[in-house]
Image 1: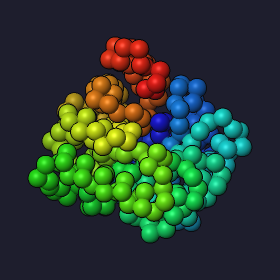
Image 2: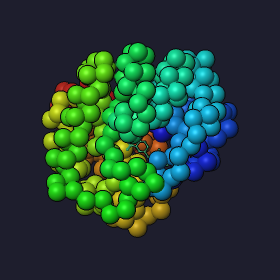
Image 3: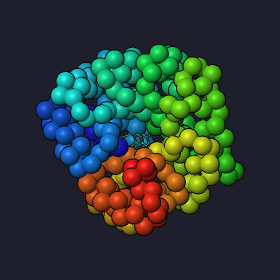
Image 4: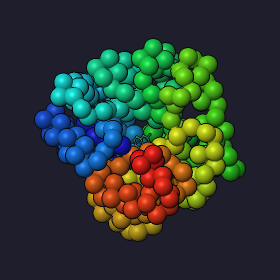
Length: 266
Ligand code: HH2
């Protein structure tokens, strides 16, 4: 999953793809590099980010979604927690709703996903982006994230979303300290054991900078290491800014880890 942030303030690529033409060109490049999905987002969820009104999010996201749909061939997801944005994007052709609030942010979201027939990614987050990094605490981060995701999966199904359409994501960096992120990566197999495919978003995130001392744009090597280990522990989809390098790393990892199975796992 290649990241396409149509925002002025995303933590690593804010402002670069605000013009629809630049966004479309980047989507095409990521697709050519091997992305199976392009994740279009119009609201930054970086720690401390301010919420964006729905009209503004639609204004950012829809020209890109429509252009991608019109030129066909590049499957897209929409990174939103607003029902109105999810509805417009799925009607225009988005195949997955990537909701970092796991259907908690907007009471209308579950119905929109159910009616659209799109897939959905339910992500764990403690608190909300504005405050989530203010001293997050867990007894056992992995079992709490697992319980949360199981509960949100049950909720989604109770709202009419078929279980087979649900992806789960531990939400690396969303209300988590370095130790929490590392524990989740170390024991990712416990999240995979829920039985739904797992999305992993580590690309350029702060925990890599904390470990390596690197700035956002220099965290590729750290991200590749985390994604390869996530792959080995059973993650299925990798949300990344650097598609070509990730694809290469995962191709080699798949050939090594998964005798006979790399094609199915991509
Ligand atoms: N991380 C970000 C945004 N959306 N979605 C999922 N499913 N998993 C993630 O880990 C995840 C996500 C944050 O990264 P980015 O989009 O690069 O930055 P920003 O939120 O500042 O736009």
